[in-house]
Length: 279
Ligand code: C2E
Ligand code: CA
Ligand code: CA
Ligand code: CA
Image 1 (cartoon, rainbow, N blue to C red):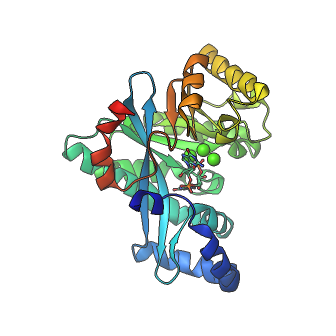
Image 2 (image 1 turned 90 degrees about the vertical axis):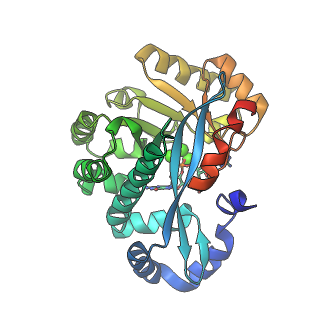
Image 3 (image 1 turned 30 degrees about the vertical axis):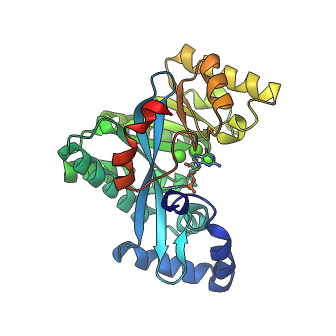
């Protein structure tokens, strides 16, 4: 119940209120929410299907609005991005993920890193290198435990600048991944210029995988390209054992999705570490 409440299906009531509230008010509320602790992170496991081992967590942002209740990111990230609130909000998120990593390190449970989502605006205009360096240093967390997920839309802007920023981030030992791979409009050769470590195949391909030959060919192609380039690949939105088995046969064993675990609170993460072994 709790886990479900932290996941999806929260937005329709909010959208109705949002219509009345308007973007201005939402933007105002967003700014106030940072200083009054209304945001929190939930964590979704990434697993290795063959060994059933936990390989990492993805931090996903949630907003507990004082009068509207729990709000999903698709309802407020676009407004945060448009208004620029994403810059301080993104800093809060990075810091909170590092604080959690520190807590897990102290408890001897930092067996896996945490991935944080970055918006294009935050990446290009938020002094992201400084933000990452500050968060890591504040909590004494090694960069190797932090992964940054970026969508390919970030690269259509100014690719040379994007590459330069990425190289600076790599100097902090953090890993970089391309999120929602396959949904943007960038060409493959363009994307391959980016110094990224991991491609995340978008859920839209995974949900058609079992029934659609073309989705299968495409996913297989991405997996082979990654292998050829020495990059890792992960499938997101894996919901069925049929999808997981097929992905494993195609050569992708790192997965994330409701089949293995929904986004959960840090307390639930503790309990969840074990059961992946029998998923
Ligand atoms: P995303 O980065 O692609 O994250 C995956 C989304 O799919 C999450 O939704 C997750 O809960 C959901 N999901 C995971 N497994 C499954 C599955 O098996 N089936 C289905 N149907 N869905 C699954 P969520 O948490 O609502 O986040 C939505 C989007 O909001 C994210 O998509 C990301 O783009 C953005 N977002 C979330 N947190 C942050 C953040 O801290 N910063 C930024 N900039 N964006 C964020
Ligand atoms: Ca993501
Ligand atoms: Ca994604
Ligand atoms: Ca997505």
